[in-house]
Length: 497
Image (tube, rainbow, N blue to C red; front, side):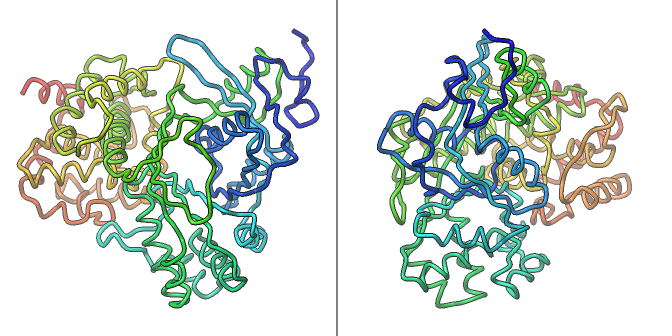
């Protein structure tokens, strides 16, 4: 192998070694039929990966992806991808140490909406665009946790209503683009959420229609009749890219990739087959199209995503730093399994074709992959958006059925402690990234005077504070945790009960 370092770009593709599996299809013939908002690591390990697989297997396929960033923070990924001709490397790390690296070519352009909103609106409104897909995270849907409705008090929402051609939020972009398509007598595009939210398509539909009704009731009626919003369940553990990932490609393959993506080998995408104007045949490369995705997504959100939060919050306080580090600790592995078995499994629906016990076994194996160093700081970021979706519904379901809530309640109590102290048990600072960071800290800090103060953050907990069965357990746990500062002993006690 040559020792010459090569930059990742279109001109160098033919010189890359076969073990990097560079795309052999002609990227110049791709059309931007998919506009994707939120080109983070997950999109690049998932939808862009599936599309690349399809392009490799079907010579007639011309479905390309135009990425979109709506925040100033997206400038970096936009610049990197442009410099690399929108190519990047996907590093797939197996539990046994095997590493597969492949160059992905399905992204063909990238637009910055905050800098040039007109370019994004016009790309969405273009006849070429058939799907607009989203990974905007749970918080991007701008929901009020108490009502479940769109938060119209957000200043960006008010701005978008008053400035429809210069929007800031994704829903402003979608609405204006659909208005132009309607006015130009063009068919509607599909809006496809790829976020970890139950009923993600239904939620996106509700939000878009609500926004459109405020802006243009006639447009809302057209959207309701013409736009499809398929629900989907997405799954692939994708940690944040590190300098070690960049160095690995340079040392192993003499490849200079400024922003590769690392992921696990497991990959799943279950989608309802409801599209407005055609779709790629992703099922030929492993995606599943089903009539109803709800049981699949509920299973995944309540087990995998909630399981991440269980390990993330408890593990951070104890001093663990990664998910695999937690699972290698028998106490944390046992606690997670008991949470899944005792509190989650009884409230799940029947899922056709899924062996639930085997699925849970696989989750523990995936979490324990020693080559996927998924940082707990990543798992815990924006917990105020995640827990109302992943964990709190399981508590509510068990309260309604008289089931166990103790394992999940300890996580809420620990989150209060975490938000207040912002350190682990040994006093090491914790990296906390959350839109409600200050509000959560202030509410948690008041716990010494009022043990229920943390639950008064209704944007997160809704009316959970009014349930005496829950508050009795919560108060006992939070007081014990503040007194002992020993989350492990509390976990052990619950496992013995």
